[in-house]
Image 1 (cartoon, rainbow, N blue to C red):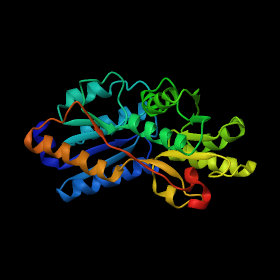
Image 2: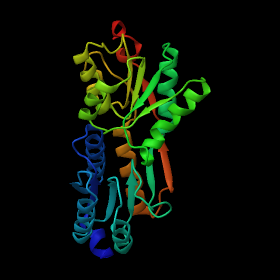
Image 3: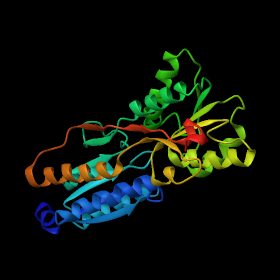
Image 4: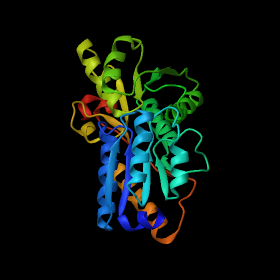
Length: 281
């Protein structure tokens, strides 16, 4: 199997949600970086389904991929880690961790804690004191990472946090507008899709974002700069991340250099009209 895999020049890439522009950009950037080095990429969308994820991983292994990168679904990964171990090929996980994978599969993502902290400090500097965090489920590690910086900054300012759980989708953000406390002055959202949905929902209620309420998203997808008011967001350079992930995998394949157990890429806040005020957009 190892000899066959090495000769195929194929890399498997399993993505949890290719409908989300954040993950689509990652897959595209990684595929292009691999192509520059002569590798073809087989991409599968698990659509947040652990069973489909296991099927994709097994199918890619059976087709002899030389290496594998997975952005996991939420939930029990089932046999995925055993499948990867049995294949004896370089494998990496990105952006989310497979349950129970600590120390078994190298992981890389962004410094979400620093991003949440920077966004919260920014909203505090704009004069907001009643700041909510919207989106995600509290039992998921990725939610804990994205809320941790927010919670720390609110505590440091002596302010009461308000964490509102919910779907991490545009529809989830839109629906949340109806139940957002009227005294809320600012919102930091789990991702840009939630923020964009919330923006639409608030517009229907006549609560202008950037004036009555300050808003920051997370990921900085392309649409953030195109909507009105332009959406402030924690910027994750996902294109660079995809390129770097490809480089680490190829270094492992070609030189035997195993990536660090965990790698975190830096983030930065891009402040736009939604948090600065619409007149500044």
